[in-house]
Length: 496
Image (cartoon, rainbow, N blue to C red):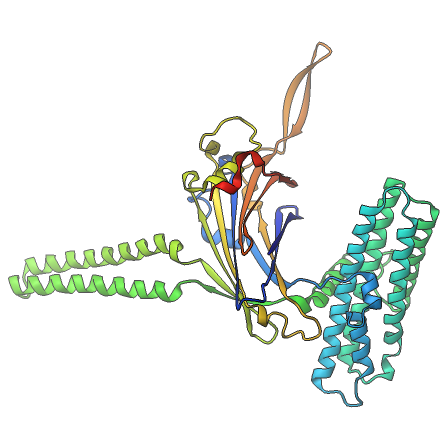
């Protein structure tokens, strides 16, 4: 099964987050994803101006385990929740703990901090979904659950000296505490802003949220954590440190990558064959005309030069033919997914190419033409189409084995595509136009935008799925991403 999210990452980048869930009945789970970018011809992104190397410079892939999902209630009540596992690991440390036991405490500390941060974010979203008129009860439960978890967790942090924990693990746990505090502060402000804007709660909700916020700010001050509410602190430094802190805590779920060119052995073999075949041709010609004309004659010399020229061209043509056809049999790169123990838990292969409209499948064509601006079905107004193909193979029995504290059975592939190059040939972001108002001609301005349409095709064990998005962008950057509903009128399930 695949879960897919496409969103704006920054001013010029989109982020495609795809979660792959393994099937444990099989030794390997196989997924394929085709992503098509339909780019207006006015942007001058085509085979002559946009190379494969440029595309891979504009794309960034991160691979990580999905964060285990717990509710705030689960963290408190479940015996095997990350919080209770962490407490138990600290309690059971012997007087002289070994590296494995200390490392386990460090892993559990990072897992708890990440899971707790995810839980308060998800709970926050649920409150905003459920909160129609009065949020007081929901907010009260939310705040009480956070306070109960903090009380238990910070009690053990306060008494770490009573346990046999190395300084490195103490630092990690305190980093986790600061990370949690930052997450609480952010989520409280988000929720406060939401219910203030919607005017759906009494003063009780605001009082509870502000009380928790002040408690966290006082706690951070007491622990010498960075606090954005303090004006004399370097705000730029705080943002940078928080980013580094997040990467450090989240690193527990990130996987290593070993990127290699796919088909490298076949490529070198073909090149060697081409060189050998060309040499055979050249040498054969040389031997034949040597016998015919003899050594040190003008005819033999001219023949030798011509055979060398042909040899070079034969080698070049065979090599070029292989390169042009290689994408049919091989991908551009293969990425071995390695866990912390350097064991392979999966593999991703990726391929980039421009494809002509006539070679697209009928479903892709129908999806692209749905909700078109003009009722015209020509060659997509000269759009250029990028195909980004991925093949993902997971080895379910190997997933999560290096993190024995928590069973992990799915990974998320976070792909960011930078579209800055696509904006370089765009018109000015504002365009003037005229209209008549009350018998007067009025001049006004509107945004000049371009649409980059994205169609995705997923091959999963449940079948084939499609999704479509529209990236609305101008020279100043991405304005929004719209999810386009695929219209059933086209009977998409009948074609391949």
